[in-house]
Amino acid sequence: MDQHHSSAASSPSLFLARGAVSTLFFVNGAILASWVPHIPAVKARHSISDGQLGLVLLSMAVGSAFALPLASWLINRFGSRLIATAAVLGFCLTLPLLLLSPNVFLLSSSLVLFGACNSILDVSMNAQAVVVEQRYNRPIMSSFHGLFSLGGLTGAGIAGLWMSRGVGDVQHVTTMMIVTILAVVVVRRGLVASPPKKENQGPTFVKPTRILLGLGILTFFALLTEGAMADWSAVYLHDVLHTDAATAAVGFAACSLMMAVGRFGGDRLAHRFSPRRLLQASGALAALGLGGGLLLGTSLAAIVGFGLVGLGIANIVPVLFSAAGRTQGVPAGTALASVASSGYLGFLAGPPLIGVVAEMSSLSVALGIVSLCCTFIAFSARIVLHPRRSHTDKVGVSAQITAVES
Image (cartoon, rainbow, N blue to C red; front, side, top):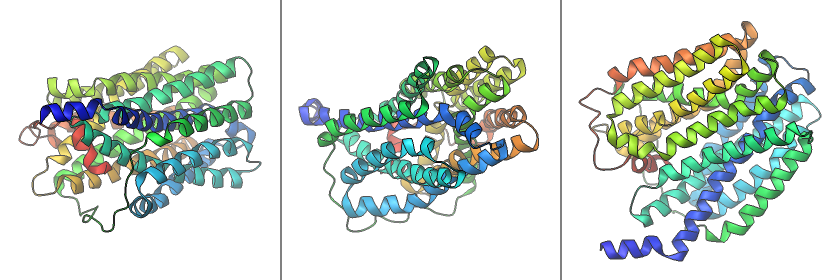
């Protein structure tokens, strides 16, 4: 039996499948990170305030939210391989539209499409990752999510380098679109064939229990923090600390780098420390990193702080998902879906809310509230992850995550 699984895991077709799915995760992160550094320029080009920018960014959240149920239907109807390929190509093609939009209405419309493609890609590529992980017969999901962060690092790094050399924003995103589409075309045949599902496996969402509600609240704050780094780190460095565009891009690159480091080491940390202690340390590190960077008020301190946020939040969601998967009396997949929906709401709706707060006070105050959210995670871990419920079973954290992503 072991020999069979070992042989299966080393087969060329499975290796190609893992490479193809890894490419989808990497491209997803790279395209998102290619948009982030240009947000300050887009904001200035359309002469909009922080509050108005927050509302414009909400368009991406709206597109993602409406596409979620569509994603499930499309995957069940056509299979994840076809939908993942179509979604990633649409995602890449939409990127230049964000900078070419001549007015706020078309910008918002483009963001709706961008968010919808991202949402469908997120669901379908994770469905592909689940199949590959099952064939490997061991947890490898963390590596896929690490590649998403690595893609974010690469995208932000390329953007910063090209912007420092005076490359135009449209030229940059167009080049990224072409390169990523070529990468997808090369590897798409390696994606796993996924026959359509004729019937549903059961309810996806349930009324949350008290335990799931607590886990969902913490997941909301964790992904709100991640979304804040994606959408507001460059704006903070550029508008508040008055750095150039290239330096502004470094903030998100630092966050992505440290998040990738944390995620690639996530399985090892989850086995070495208790989930409660890991969650406390992660929340505290993110809170101190962001709070310290804001208080010092220099570009270097902010970049270091954003990096510490990335390292801190890297493993918060895996810990919370793992705890949800062990909730008594609720099927693991259903519990994980309930908690994940709260987190996804935080990731999508959090950044626009930050814009509203920034409009009412300042962006520094708004990001300070994000630091308090991380502090709340650290202090609440003792209550939410009660020792009675934080026992680590034999299944890895990443294996628990696959239940919600399948």
